[in-house]
Image (cartoon, rainbow, N blue to C red; front, side, top):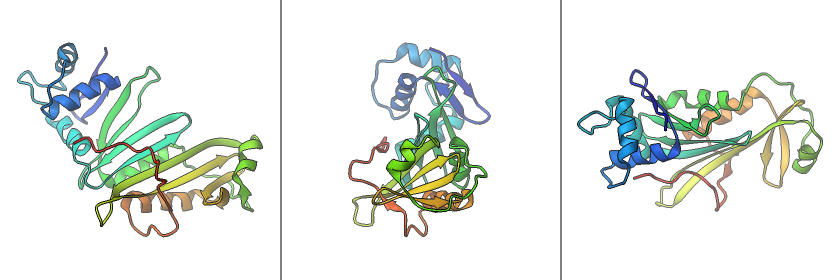
Length: 220
């Protein structure tokens, strides 16, 4: 296994099995990962005394205690997961095409920009008319189709959340609405929806999460 760790930024690149061992180790859970822990020590992600490097520990804390919510972004056959605490956003995303994942942290205010970069949100022409989703899916113009789901505990303790689904075509952007209707959108409009959703403000008009939403669970 290959583990890359940058102590300046706290970014860790490793396979998912290594990340699982690290999270269990940081949580004090017993696990059989002696060789994996040795690789993490060699990369300086874990100190010789067993403590997780301080730059990485805060990221793992956000994963264990995501009191502000969790998120899942599916795009271009890839998946990005996130855990949000009051002060830190922890992101787990594809790294280098070898099956490894990059675990990194950033300030929650920078989360919309990170998500926009992942889906290449950039200038597009504005479509004119709404279209049925199945028409878009079959006309050969789709560049990417992505869905962002953000979940959090509701006021009554039950899971709550919202989702944003966007079809990016050669002719512009569409947001997918209930009834499988695609409404014309602009990059600026989609950016505002990203900000609203990740900040959980002004959520009117954003679709509730479906009951079977596949978002990362609380790691605590």
